[in-house]
Image (cartoon, rainbow over all chains, first blue to last red):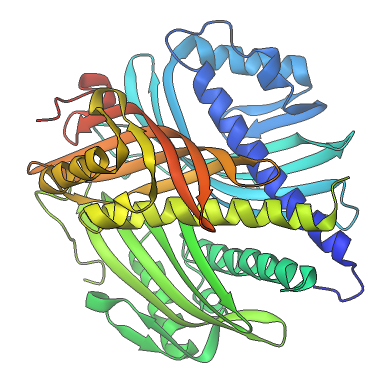
Amino acid sequence: MPSERTVEQRLQRLEDIAAVRQLKHTYAKLMDAGLCHENKAWPDDRFLALFADDAIWESNVHGRHEGREALRALFAGWAARITFAKHHTIAPSIDIAPSGAEASGHWYTWETITADGQPIWLAATYNDDFVKRDRRWLIKHVRSNIQFRSPYHQGWAAEAPLPQMGA
Amino acid sequence: MSIEDRIRTLEEIEAVRRVLAAVGATCDAPYDGAAFAGHFTEDGVMDLMEMGVYTGRAAIQEFIDGMRARVPFTMHYWDGYAIDVDGAEATATWYGFETPNLNGTAHLGGLTHDATLKKIEGCWMVTRLGQQLHFMTPYDKGWVRQRVTDQTA
Amino acid sequence: MADLEERVQRLEAIEGIRRLKIRYAQLCDANYDPPGLTALFTEDAVWDGGDLGRYEGHDQIRGFWEGASKSFTFALHYMIGHTIDVDPPFTSGTGHWYIWEPATVNGRAVFLGATYDDVYQKVGGEWRFKQVNANLHFFTPYEDGWVKTPMMPMD
Protein backbone atom coordinates (compact mmCIF):
# COMPACT_ATOMS: atom_id res chain seq x y z
CA MET A 1 0.00 0.00 0.00
CA PRO A 2 1.73 3.26 -1.07
CA SER A 3 2.16 5.31 2.08
CA GLU A 4 1.38 8.62 0.35
CA ARG A 5 -2.30 7.72 0.09
CA THR A 6 -4.50 9.45 2.59
CA VAL A 7 -6.74 7.66 5.04
CA GLU A 8 -9.68 8.96 3.00
CA GLN A 9 -8.30 7.48 -0.24
CA ARG A 10 -7.60 4.13 1.41
CA LEU A 11 -11.12 4.00 2.77
CA GLN A 12 -12.51 4.92 -0.65
CA ARG A 13 -10.68 1.95 -2.19
CA LEU A 14 -12.20 -0.46 0.34
CA GLU A 15 -15.65 1.00 -0.29
CA ASP A 16 -15.18 0.61 -4.05
CA ILE A 17 -14.14 -3.06 -3.65
CA ALA A 18 -17.27 -3.66 -1.56
CA ALA A 19 -19.45 -1.89 -4.14
CA VAL A 20 -18.07 -3.88 -7.09
CA ARG A 21 -18.51 -7.11 -5.13
CA GLN A 22 -22.13 -6.21 -4.44
CA LEU A 23 -22.67 -5.24 -8.10
CA LYS A 24 -21.55 -8.66 -9.34
CA HIS A 25 -23.72 -10.42 -6.78
CA THR A 26 -26.68 -8.29 -7.88
CA TYR A 27 -25.95 -9.28 -11.50
CA ALA A 28 -26.19 -12.97 -10.50
CA LYS A 29 -29.25 -12.46 -8.33
CA LEU A 30 -31.25 -10.49 -10.91
CA MET A 31 -30.25 -12.84 -13.72
CA ASP A 32 -31.42 -15.83 -11.70
CA ALA A 33 -34.66 -14.07 -10.82
CA GLY A 34 -35.16 -13.46 -14.55
CA LEU A 35 -34.24 -16.90 -15.85
CA CYS A 36 -37.22 -18.79 -14.48
CA HIS A 37 -40.46 -20.33 -15.66
CA GLU A 38 -42.60 -17.45 -14.48
CA ASN A 39 -40.69 -14.58 -16.04
CA LYS A 40 -40.75 -14.15 -19.80
CA ALA A 41 -40.32 -10.35 -19.74
CA TRP A 42 -36.62 -10.55 -19.01
CA PRO A 43 -34.18 -8.84 -19.28
CA ASP A 44 -35.90 -5.91 -17.65
CA ASP A 45 -34.59 -2.36 -17.35
CA ARG A 46 -33.56 -2.94 -13.74
CA PHE A 47 -31.13 -5.65 -14.83
CA LEU A 48 -29.85 -3.74 -17.88
CA ALA A 49 -29.26 -0.68 -15.67
CA LEU A 50 -26.37 -2.60 -14.09
CA PHE A 51 -24.46 -2.14 -17.38
CA ALA A 52 -22.84 0.91 -18.95
CA ASP A 53 -24.52 2.01 -22.21
CA ASP A 54 -21.54 0.78 -24.23
CA ALA A 55 -21.00 -2.40 -22.23
CA ILE A 56 -19.69 -5.59 -23.82
CA TRP A 57 -20.64 -9.15 -22.88
CA GLU A 58 -18.51 -11.88 -24.41
CA SER A 59 -17.65 -15.50 -23.83
CA ASN A 60 -15.74 -18.27 -25.54
CA VAL A 61 -19.08 -19.88 -26.37
CA HIS A 62 -21.49 -16.98 -26.98
CA GLY A 63 -19.25 -14.57 -28.93
CA ARG A 64 -19.13 -10.81 -28.40
CA HIS A 65 -22.14 -8.54 -27.86
CA GLU A 66 -21.72 -4.78 -27.58
CA GLY A 67 -24.17 -2.11 -26.43
CA ARG A 68 -27.23 -2.35 -24.26
CA GLU A 69 -29.61 -3.40 -27.06
CA ALA A 70 -27.29 -6.22 -28.15
CA LEU A 71 -27.14 -7.37 -24.54
CA ARG A 72 -30.92 -7.25 -24.32
CA ALA A 73 -31.20 -9.54 -27.35
CA LEU A 74 -28.52 -11.93 -26.02
CA PHE A 75 -30.19 -12.29 -22.63
CA ALA A 76 -33.68 -12.59 -24.14
CA GLY A 77 -32.37 -15.56 -26.14
CA TRP A 78 -31.30 -17.22 -22.90
CA ALA A 79 -34.65 -16.49 -21.26
CA ALA A 80 -36.37 -18.34 -24.11
CA ARG A 81 -34.46 -21.55 -23.35
CA ILE A 82 -33.50 -21.41 -19.69
CA THR A 83 -36.22 -22.05 -17.13
CA PHE A 84 -34.02 -22.28 -14.03
CA ALA A 85 -30.57 -20.89 -13.24
CA LYS A 86 -28.51 -20.27 -10.15
CA HIS A 87 -25.22 -18.43 -10.74
CA HIS A 88 -23.18 -19.29 -7.66
CA THR A 89 -20.57 -16.57 -8.16
CA ILE A 90 -17.54 -17.30 -6.08
CA ALA A 91 -14.19 -15.92 -4.92
CA PRO A 92 -14.06 -12.25 -5.89
CA SER A 93 -10.64 -10.73 -6.61
CA ILE A 94 -11.17 -7.03 -7.27
CA ASP A 95 -8.67 -4.34 -8.28
CA ILE A 96 -9.54 -0.66 -8.22
CA ALA A 97 -7.53 1.42 -10.73
CA PRO A 98 -5.48 4.31 -9.28
CA SER A 99 -7.96 6.74 -10.88
CA GLY A 100 -10.72 5.28 -8.72
CA ALA A 101 -13.03 5.37 -11.75
CA GLU A 102 -12.26 1.93 -13.21
CA ALA A 103 -12.01 -1.54 -11.73
CA SER A 104 -11.46 -5.13 -12.76
CA GLY A 105 -12.58 -8.29 -11.08
CA HIS A 106 -12.15 -12.05 -11.32
CA TRP A 107 -14.72 -14.58 -10.16
CA TYR A 108 -15.57 -18.25 -10.55
CA THR A 109 -19.11 -19.30 -11.26
CA TRP A 110 -20.71 -22.67 -10.61
CA GLU A 111 -24.11 -22.75 -12.24
CA THR A 112 -27.02 -25.12 -11.91
CA ILE A 113 -29.16 -24.58 -15.01
CA THR A 114 -32.20 -26.10 -16.65
CA ALA A 115 -31.98 -25.44 -20.40
CA ASP A 116 -34.47 -26.93 -22.88
CA GLY A 117 -35.78 -28.99 -19.96
CA GLN A 118 -32.39 -30.59 -19.21
CA PRO A 119 -30.27 -30.13 -16.05
CA ILE A 120 -26.78 -28.79 -16.78
CA TRP A 121 -23.71 -27.90 -14.72
CA LEU A 122 -21.86 -24.87 -16.04
CA ALA A 123 -18.45 -23.87 -14.73
CA ALA A 124 -16.79 -20.62 -15.79
CA THR A 125 -14.50 -17.80 -14.77
CA TYR A 126 -15.24 -14.11 -15.17
CA ASN A 127 -12.64 -11.45 -15.99
CA ASP A 128 -14.75 -8.31 -15.88
CA ASP A 129 -14.19 -4.56 -16.15
CA PHE A 130 -16.21 -1.94 -14.33
CA VAL A 131 -16.54 1.81 -14.61
CA LYS A 132 -17.74 4.41 -12.11
CA ARG A 133 -20.10 6.98 -13.60
CA ASP A 134 -22.02 9.56 -11.55
CA ARG A 135 -20.64 7.91 -8.40
CA ARG A 136 -22.18 4.55 -9.34
CA TRP A 137 -20.30 1.43 -10.42
CA LEU A 138 -21.48 -0.14 -13.69
CA ILE A 139 -20.49 -3.28 -15.58
CA LYS A 140 -18.34 -2.30 -18.57
CA HIS A 141 -17.13 -5.60 -19.97
CA VAL A 142 -18.00 -9.16 -19.00
CA ARG A 143 -15.55 -11.81 -20.21
CA SER A 144 -16.79 -15.26 -19.36
CA ASN A 145 -14.55 -18.23 -20.05
CA ILE A 146 -16.77 -21.28 -19.89
CA GLN A 147 -14.84 -24.33 -18.73
CA PHE A 148 -17.61 -26.86 -19.19
CA ARG A 149 -21.34 -27.11 -19.84
CA SER A 150 -22.19 -30.67 -18.94
CA PRO A 151 -25.44 -32.61 -18.78
CA TYR A 152 -26.15 -33.49 -15.14
CA HIS A 153 -26.24 -37.23 -15.84
CA GLN A 154 -22.96 -37.23 -17.75
CA GLY A 155 -20.45 -35.13 -15.78
CA TRP A 156 -17.60 -33.03 -17.21
CA ALA A 157 -14.92 -35.50 -18.25
CA ALA A 158 -16.63 -36.81 -21.39
CA GLU A 159 -16.34 -33.68 -23.56
CA ALA A 160 -13.32 -32.11 -25.22
CA PRO A 161 -12.13 -28.94 -23.43
CA LEU A 162 -13.69 -25.70 -24.71
CA PRO A 163 -11.29 -23.23 -26.37
CA GLN A 164 -10.49 -20.38 -23.95
CA MET A 165 -10.28 -16.65 -24.64
CA GLY A 166 -7.08 -14.81 -23.77
CA ALA A 167 -7.06 -12.46 -20.78
CA MET B 1 -8.15 1.83 17.84
CA SER B 2 -7.55 4.85 15.61
CA ILE B 3 -9.44 5.24 12.35
CA GLU B 4 -6.21 4.56 10.52
CA ASP B 5 -5.62 1.28 12.41
CA ARG B 6 -9.18 0.15 11.73
CA ILE B 7 -8.80 0.88 8.02
CA ARG B 8 -5.48 -0.98 8.06
CA THR B 9 -7.18 -4.07 9.55
CA LEU B 10 -9.84 -4.02 6.82
CA GLU B 11 -7.13 -3.54 4.16
CA GLU B 12 -5.13 -6.47 5.48
CA ILE B 13 -8.17 -8.78 5.55
CA GLU B 14 -8.75 -7.83 1.90
CA ALA B 15 -5.05 -8.37 1.08
CA VAL B 16 -5.02 -11.85 2.68
CA ARG B 17 -8.19 -12.75 0.77
CA ARG B 18 -6.45 -11.69 -2.45
CA VAL B 19 -3.33 -13.77 -1.76
CA LEU B 20 -5.40 -16.86 -0.98
CA ALA B 21 -7.46 -16.33 -4.16
CA ALA B 22 -4.20 -16.22 -6.13
CA VAL B 23 -3.00 -19.41 -4.42
CA GLY B 24 -6.26 -21.15 -5.42
CA ALA B 25 -6.01 -19.98 -9.02
CA THR B 26 -2.46 -21.32 -9.44
CA CYS B 27 -3.62 -24.84 -8.62
CA ASP B 28 -6.34 -24.80 -11.25
CA ALA B 29 -5.30 -26.76 -14.33
CA PRO B 30 -2.75 -26.31 -15.74
CA TYR B 31 -1.19 -26.37 -12.27
CA ASP B 32 1.63 -23.83 -11.84
CA GLY B 33 3.87 -25.28 -9.14
CA ALA B 34 6.38 -22.41 -9.17
CA ALA B 35 3.71 -19.70 -8.83
CA PHE B 36 1.89 -21.72 -6.17
CA ALA B 37 5.04 -22.35 -4.11
CA GLY B 38 6.06 -18.69 -4.55
CA HIS B 39 3.25 -17.69 -2.20
CA PHE B 40 4.84 -19.71 0.63
CA THR B 41 7.72 -18.71 2.90
CA GLU B 42 10.96 -20.62 2.24
CA ASP B 43 10.16 -23.00 5.11
CA GLY B 44 6.39 -23.01 4.44
CA VAL B 45 4.41 -26.17 5.10
CA MET B 46 1.53 -27.67 3.11
CA ASP B 47 -0.33 -30.28 5.17
CA LEU B 48 -2.70 -32.31 3.00
CA MET B 49 -3.26 -34.97 5.69
CA GLU B 50 -3.89 -38.28 3.84
CA MET B 51 -2.16 -36.79 0.77
CA GLY B 52 1.05 -36.01 2.64
CA VAL B 53 2.92 -33.14 4.30
CA TYR B 54 5.26 -31.04 2.15
CA THR B 55 7.83 -28.74 3.75
CA GLY B 56 9.68 -25.98 1.90
CA ARG B 57 9.04 -24.34 -1.47
CA ALA B 58 10.86 -27.02 -3.48
CA ALA B 59 8.79 -29.89 -2.07
CA ILE B 60 5.56 -27.93 -2.47
CA GLN B 61 6.37 -27.03 -6.07
CA GLU B 62 7.29 -30.63 -6.90
CA PHE B 63 3.96 -31.90 -5.52
CA ILE B 64 1.89 -29.36 -7.46
CA ASP B 65 3.80 -29.97 -10.70
CA GLY B 66 3.20 -33.69 -10.16
CA MET B 67 -0.54 -33.00 -10.05
CA ARG B 68 -0.18 -31.15 -13.36
CA ALA B 69 1.10 -34.35 -14.94
CA ARG B 70 -1.77 -36.43 -13.56
CA VAL B 71 -4.80 -34.14 -13.64
CA PRO B 72 -5.67 -32.64 -17.05
CA PHE B 73 -8.49 -30.46 -15.72
CA THR B 74 -9.63 -29.02 -12.42
CA MET B 75 -11.05 -25.84 -10.91
CA HIS B 76 -10.75 -24.68 -7.30
CA TYR B 77 -13.82 -22.82 -6.10
CA TRP B 78 -12.59 -21.19 -2.87
CA ASP B 79 -14.75 -18.89 -0.77
CA GLY B 80 -16.31 -18.47 2.65
CA TYR B 81 -13.18 -16.93 4.15
CA ALA B 82 -12.89 -16.16 7.85
CA ILE B 83 -9.70 -14.10 8.22
CA ASP B 84 -8.14 -12.73 11.40
CA VAL B 85 -5.24 -10.32 11.21
CA ASP B 86 -3.00 -9.54 14.19
CA GLY B 87 -0.20 -7.17 13.18
CA ALA B 88 2.03 -8.98 10.70
CA GLU B 89 0.39 -12.37 11.24
CA ALA B 90 -2.89 -13.73 9.96
CA THR B 91 -4.99 -16.88 10.14
CA ALA B 92 -7.67 -17.95 7.70
CA THR B 93 -10.18 -20.72 7.19
CA TRP B 94 -12.27 -21.24 4.08
CA TYR B 95 -14.29 -23.67 1.98
CA GLY B 96 -13.36 -25.16 -1.36
CA PHE B 97 -14.83 -27.49 -3.90
CA GLU B 98 -13.02 -28.92 -6.89
CA THR B 99 -13.98 -30.46 -10.22
CA PRO B 100 -11.03 -32.58 -11.35
CA ASN B 101 -10.81 -35.07 -14.15
CA LEU B 102 -9.02 -38.03 -12.51
CA ASN B 103 -8.08 -40.94 -14.73
CA GLY B 104 -10.67 -39.88 -17.31
CA THR B 105 -13.51 -39.63 -14.80
CA ALA B 106 -15.16 -36.41 -13.62
CA HIS B 107 -14.82 -36.02 -9.86
CA LEU B 108 -16.40 -33.71 -7.34
CA GLY B 109 -14.35 -32.72 -4.32
CA GLY B 110 -15.52 -31.06 -1.10
CA LEU B 111 -12.87 -29.59 1.17
CA THR B 112 -12.14 -27.12 3.93
CA HIS B 113 -8.85 -25.30 4.32
CA ASP B 114 -6.91 -23.35 6.89
CA ALA B 115 -3.77 -21.26 6.67
CA THR B 116 -1.41 -19.10 8.65
CA LEU B 117 0.35 -16.20 6.95
CA LYS B 118 3.09 -13.73 7.76
CA LYS B 119 3.64 -10.30 6.25
CA ILE B 120 7.21 -10.08 5.01
CA GLU B 121 8.49 -6.95 3.24
CA GLY B 122 4.95 -5.85 2.49
CA CYS B 123 3.75 -9.22 1.12
CA TRP B 124 1.52 -11.75 2.83
CA MET B 125 3.26 -15.14 2.60
CA VAL B 126 1.76 -18.49 3.56
CA THR B 127 3.62 -20.21 6.40
CA ARG B 128 1.22 -23.15 6.60
CA LEU B 129 -1.63 -24.36 4.43
CA GLY B 130 -3.90 -27.14 5.66
CA GLN B 131 -6.57 -29.16 3.93
CA GLN B 132 -9.38 -31.37 5.18
CA LEU B 133 -10.74 -33.61 2.44
CA HIS B 134 -14.43 -34.41 3.05
CA PHE B 135 -15.03 -36.17 -0.24
CA MET B 136 -13.43 -36.66 -3.65
CA THR B 137 -15.92 -38.82 -5.44
CA PRO B 138 -16.28 -40.11 -8.99
CA TYR B 139 -19.14 -38.08 -10.38
CA ASP B 140 -21.23 -41.17 -11.26
CA LYS B 141 -21.03 -42.45 -7.65
CA GLY B 142 -21.42 -39.63 -5.11
CA TRP B 143 -19.91 -39.36 -1.62
CA VAL B 144 -22.14 -41.95 0.03
CA ARG B 145 -21.18 -44.77 -2.37
CA GLN B 146 -17.50 -43.79 -2.70
CA ARG B 147 -16.22 -41.02 -0.46
CA VAL B 148 -12.62 -40.68 -1.65
CA THR B 149 -10.65 -41.51 -4.79
CA ASP B 150 -6.89 -41.42 -4.26
CA GLN B 151 -5.68 -38.39 -6.28
CA THR B 152 -2.01 -39.26 -5.99
CA ALA B 153 -2.28 -42.77 -7.41
CA MET C 1 -20.20 12.49 2.15
CA ALA C 2 -20.48 10.66 5.45
CA ASP C 3 -17.62 11.24 7.87
CA LEU C 4 -14.67 8.86 8.11
CA GLU C 5 -15.87 7.28 11.33
CA GLU C 6 -19.22 6.39 9.81
CA ARG C 7 -17.65 5.03 6.63
CA VAL C 8 -15.28 2.78 8.59
CA GLN C 9 -18.17 1.60 10.75
CA ARG C 10 -20.08 0.54 7.63
CA LEU C 11 -17.21 -1.60 6.33
CA GLU C 12 -16.61 -3.10 9.77
CA ALA C 13 -20.29 -3.99 10.00
CA ILE C 14 -20.18 -5.74 6.61
CA GLU C 15 -17.11 -7.71 7.69
CA GLY C 16 -18.74 -8.58 11.03
CA ILE C 17 -21.90 -9.86 9.33
CA ARG C 18 -19.84 -11.86 6.84
CA ARG C 19 -18.09 -13.55 9.77
CA LEU C 20 -21.44 -14.32 11.41
CA LYS C 21 -22.63 -16.09 8.26
CA ILE C 22 -19.42 -18.12 7.91
CA ARG C 23 -19.60 -19.07 11.61
CA TYR C 24 -23.16 -20.29 10.95
CA ALA C 25 -21.88 -22.43 8.06
CA GLN C 26 -19.03 -23.86 10.11
CA LEU C 27 -21.33 -24.81 13.01
CA CYS C 28 -23.84 -26.40 10.59
CA ASP C 29 -20.98 -28.49 9.22
CA ALA C 30 -19.93 -29.49 12.77
CA ASN C 31 -23.06 -31.67 12.99
CA TYR C 32 -25.29 -28.61 13.51
CA ASP C 33 -24.01 -27.89 17.06
CA PRO C 34 -27.47 -26.89 18.38
CA PRO C 35 -26.35 -24.71 21.33
CA GLY C 36 -23.62 -23.02 19.26
CA LEU C 37 -25.96 -22.22 16.39
CA THR C 38 -28.80 -21.07 18.62
CA ALA C 39 -26.44 -18.59 20.28
CA LEU C 40 -25.98 -16.87 16.90
CA PHE C 41 -29.66 -15.83 16.93
CA THR C 42 -31.42 -13.09 18.87
CA GLU C 43 -33.84 -14.34 21.54
CA ASP C 44 -36.86 -13.52 19.35
CA ALA C 45 -35.31 -14.60 16.03
CA VAL C 46 -37.16 -16.42 13.26
CA TRP C 47 -35.63 -19.11 11.02
CA ASP C 48 -38.01 -19.61 8.10
CA GLY C 49 -37.21 -22.26 5.52
CA GLY C 50 -40.60 -22.46 3.77
CA ASP C 51 -41.15 -26.21 3.28
CA LEU C 52 -38.36 -26.82 5.80
CA GLY C 53 -40.50 -25.17 8.48
CA ARG C 54 -40.66 -21.96 10.49
CA TYR C 55 -39.04 -21.72 13.92
CA GLU C 56 -39.37 -18.78 16.27
CA GLY C 57 -37.38 -18.08 19.41
CA HIS C 58 -34.39 -19.91 20.88
CA ASP C 59 -36.29 -23.04 22.01
CA GLN C 60 -37.85 -23.76 18.61
CA ILE C 61 -34.66 -22.88 16.75
CA ARG C 62 -32.58 -25.18 18.98
CA GLY C 63 -35.12 -27.95 18.40
CA PHE C 64 -34.79 -27.49 14.65
CA TRP C 65 -30.99 -27.83 14.79
CA GLU C 66 -31.30 -30.91 17.02
CA GLY C 67 -33.52 -32.53 14.39
CA ALA C 68 -31.18 -31.52 11.58
CA SER C 69 -28.20 -33.02 13.41
CA LYS C 70 -29.95 -36.41 13.36
CA SER C 71 -31.05 -36.49 9.68
CA PHE C 72 -28.12 -34.59 8.09
CA THR C 73 -25.13 -36.77 8.96
CA PHE C 74 -22.81 -34.82 6.65
CA ALA C 75 -22.99 -31.40 5.02
CA LEU C 76 -20.78 -28.70 3.57
CA HIS C 77 -22.43 -25.27 3.58
CA TYR C 78 -20.81 -23.25 0.80
CA MET C 79 -21.90 -19.68 1.53
CA ILE C 80 -21.47 -17.86 -1.75
CA GLY C 81 -21.37 -14.20 -2.71
CA HIS C 82 -23.38 -11.69 -0.79
CA THR C 83 -24.90 -8.28 -0.70
CA ILE C 84 -24.94 -6.80 2.79
CA ASP C 85 -26.69 -3.51 3.43
CA VAL C 86 -26.26 -1.56 6.63
CA ASP C 87 -27.19 1.99 7.55
CA PRO C 88 -26.31 4.23 10.48
CA PRO C 89 -26.24 3.65 13.40
CA PHE C 90 -25.09 0.22 12.15
CA THR C 91 -26.99 -1.85 14.69
CA SER C 92 -29.00 -3.74 12.08
CA GLY C 93 -28.56 -4.91 8.50
CA THR C 94 -29.87 -7.13 5.71
CA GLY C 95 -28.12 -9.64 3.53
CA HIS C 96 -28.60 -11.89 0.49
CA TRP C 97 -26.50 -15.01 -0.05
CA TYR C 98 -26.43 -18.13 -2.19
CA ILE C 99 -25.76 -21.54 -0.70
CA TRP C 100 -24.72 -24.70 -2.47
CA GLU C 101 -24.73 -27.70 -0.15
CA PRO C 102 -23.71 -31.29 -0.79
CA ALA C 103 -25.09 -33.34 2.11
CA THR C 104 -25.92 -36.83 3.32
CA VAL C 105 -29.53 -36.98 4.50
CA ASN C 106 -30.81 -40.20 6.06
CA GLY C 107 -28.03 -42.09 4.30
CA ARG C 108 -28.58 -40.55 0.83
CA ALA C 109 -26.30 -38.14 -1.01
CA VAL C 110 -28.22 -34.97 -1.90
CA PHE C 111 -27.58 -31.54 -3.39
CA LEU C 112 -29.32 -28.60 -1.79
CA GLY C 113 -29.44 -25.19 -3.50
CA ALA C 114 -30.96 -22.10 -1.89
CA THR C 115 -30.70 -18.40 -1.35
CA TYR C 116 -30.93 -16.58 1.95
CA ASP C 117 -32.56 -13.29 2.82
CA ASP C 118 -31.34 -12.40 6.30
CA VAL C 119 -31.91 -9.67 8.84
CA TYR C 120 -29.10 -9.01 11.31
CA GLN C 121 -29.02 -7.21 14.61
CA LYS C 122 -26.16 -6.17 16.83
CA VAL C 123 -26.63 -7.33 20.43
CA GLY C 124 -24.05 -6.45 23.08
CA GLY C 125 -21.47 -5.61 20.43
CA GLU C 126 -21.95 -8.87 18.49
CA TRP C 127 -23.80 -9.45 15.23
CA ARG C 128 -26.71 -11.91 15.48
CA PHE C 129 -29.38 -13.28 13.15
CA LYS C 130 -32.77 -11.67 13.73
CA GLN C 131 -34.39 -13.41 10.77
CA VAL C 132 -33.17 -16.06 8.34
CA ASN C 133 -35.31 -16.79 5.29
CA ALA C 134 -33.97 -19.78 3.38
CA ASN C 135 -35.49 -19.99 -0.11
CA LEU C 136 -34.98 -23.56 -1.25
CA HIS C 137 -34.38 -23.97 -5.00
CA PHE C 138 -33.70 -27.67 -5.08
CA PHE C 139 -33.20 -30.53 -2.66
CA THR C 140 -32.42 -33.40 -4.94
CA PRO C 141 -31.06 -36.92 -4.59
CA TYR C 142 -27.57 -37.05 -6.09
CA GLU C 143 -28.70 -39.62 -8.66
CA ASP C 144 -31.66 -37.55 -9.87
CA GLY C 145 -30.73 -33.87 -10.33
CA TRP C 146 -33.01 -30.82 -10.05
CA VAL C 147 -35.17 -31.52 -13.11
CA LYS C 148 -36.19 -35.10 -12.28
CA THR C 149 -36.63 -34.48 -8.52
CA PRO C 150 -36.41 -30.80 -7.57
CA MET C 151 -37.70 -31.41 -4.03
CA MET C 152 -37.33 -34.75 -2.33
CA PRO C 153 -39.42 -35.33 0.81
CA MET C 154 -37.62 -34.33 4.00
CA ASP C 155 -38.20 -37.61 5.86
